[in-house]
Length: 165
Image (cartoon, rainbow, N blue to C red; front, side, top):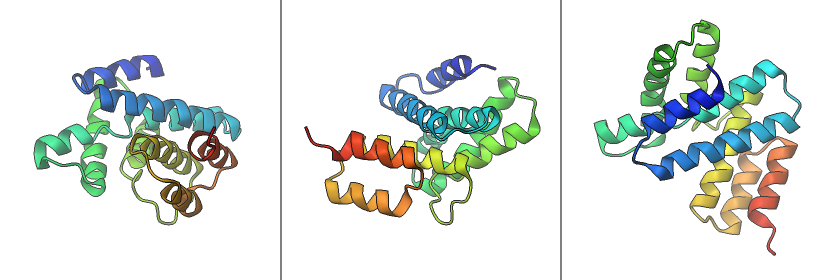
């Protein structure tokens, strides 16, 4: 399945929630840009892009089940929903599906991030979340210092959130 088709599936999944649709689209765009500028292999690029599209798939089942969507709940419910959607969409590469589901299940786990695909997903999600929440400069700088590792992610954070015109 191509990313355009998967985006269509996620728009259908999130039907009626333009805020969540716009969120995952922004994370997807930033993750793709960061991954491209960090010169990842085409396989890793595909993993990053697919995970970015699906990263918040757990919000909807969390809201239905718990009436909230805290990070750990979202990761747990997200992994299940991600696997089900990918199987329904015809993804057959078990290793690929497992990796996407693992990333969805860990995109709010910030301790000891070792893998570039997870790092980029976290950075892209932070870029969008900090903007959407209109975080203040001190909070943005703290997130940068604590969680950003890629040169591109740091540059985008500076350009998007810290440069005042």
